Image (cartoon, rainbow, N blue to C red; front, top):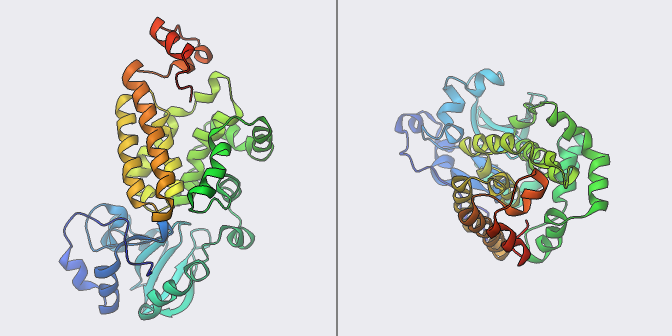
Length: 339
């Protein structure tokens, strides 16, 4: 089945006909047919829309903060797409080039816009260099080892994702020790105020930054109040990421971890938002993985149920030094959720 058969996101604002008319014929055809997110978030083709800005060719091409200025694009270059690694794909004189944010140099992909889709159909991972291990060998980035360690080869089947679930959501002292040895310095930087701005310039780097704030803090500060000390920053990062469409430009499983700071929140509004996002993510996820994402949705609803009932998570009371209510004490004694 064609990778282009089911776009996972489309703009709801009207087409900007002036922008569309200004595009070369081949680019115009590509945008009209394929604007949106495919390859489970690995590639995002921009649309001829004014909003949202992250989806707009016009904003990236000639807007106030256009890529022509920030990346010093050559004259006439049209930024048509972005990969989950933050690489920009541009069209110049009918040729397609890839610009990595670290080098800012255009590398020809050896195809015209006419052959662009055919190459993606044939082997998108090779064509766009989307394999994280190969990229790490070619162009190391600080956040890549964390993503590789966290997601590994979790794949898309419910069975394979299920094998990773205990690692992600369980309590494993051996895993905590490994994470501390490899990534403890990242958490210490976050606790000292590092905002990882260079990471958040790319979609997958943003996921890694949220993992540090939300997941490493829980693994490496387990059982201590510090486990929750970065939660507010994590939620702020997630809200910004969602506003900028980052969750639409990464793999479904990575988007799930973007949403988890909202699931960890003791705000009813955050919980409701998280459930809605998880439901949307289930619809977007590859069909083969949908049962796993339905399970994630179920878990999000259980978090919402607890906040609706108590306004907070009772199992955190002891760690945070909060006095439990009689109802909370009964709930925990009867085996209530202690996420």
